[in-house]
Length: 89
Image 1 (cartoon, one colour):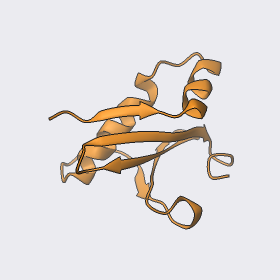
Image 2: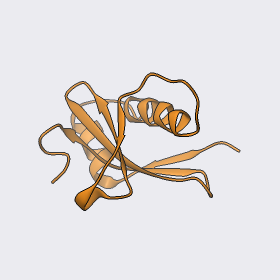
Image 3: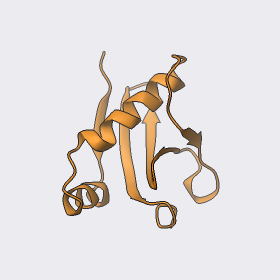
């Protein structure tokens, strides 16, 4: 079964304002999921804490992608895509 990825309204607006395709966010998140499943993949990913407890963060240059992953239903939800300083607000 394949993983399904969806984006929040904020994430879609961020990509649209920057004229970026959905793949810009989907590719790093897919690599992060592979890493969580035990594969050897190069991706800068961390589990978040505090307000974002239960989410994961992927670093793409100066941008951050915050997402949640449900392993039972194999779905991922990209919550936030933003600059480094603004992503965690």
